[in-house]
Structures are given as C-alpha cells and as structure tokens.
Image (cartoon, rainbow, N blue to C red):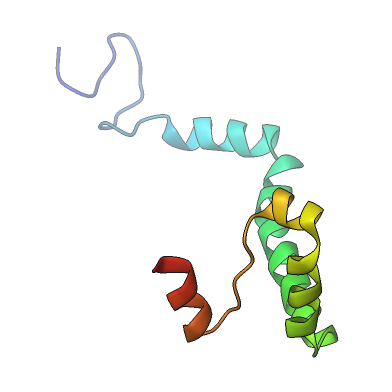
Length: 91
C-alpha cells in the first residue's frame, strides 16, 4: 500500500488529507464560542485603555487602594507603573 492512500478510497493526498473537512466541522461547531475568545481580550484591553483615559488621577486612586487593608490583602502590594515602582517591586 502506498503512503497517503487508503485502500478502496478514491481520495488522493498526503499527510493532511481530510484536514479541511475537520476544520470546517470544528469552525461550524464553534461558530458562537470562537468570536467570544477573539473579542474578549480586545474588549478587556479597550476597557483598560478607557480606564486610564477616564482617570487622570490614577496615582491617587492607587494610593487610596493601597491604604485599604482589605484591598491590600486581596490584591497584594500595588506598585506604580514607573521605574521607581519597578525597582521597588523587583528589588
């Protein structure tokens, strides 16, 4: 028997024979879930950007959040997004 052929079948091909059929079945099955997996990270990223744009005094917000013991226990130490914060977090 030659490699890539199934005895009695008329389909000729190599190692990827039937891959298109399998992918079309998977895409048809996941046509509702797949856009969620693509759009969800984009929406989260857009939300973060809008948070930064809507809150110009975010450093004050982080200071208030760090002063709250419950938030510190839940989130851990909050470091600023600057060189000083990086040095404080990793040193």
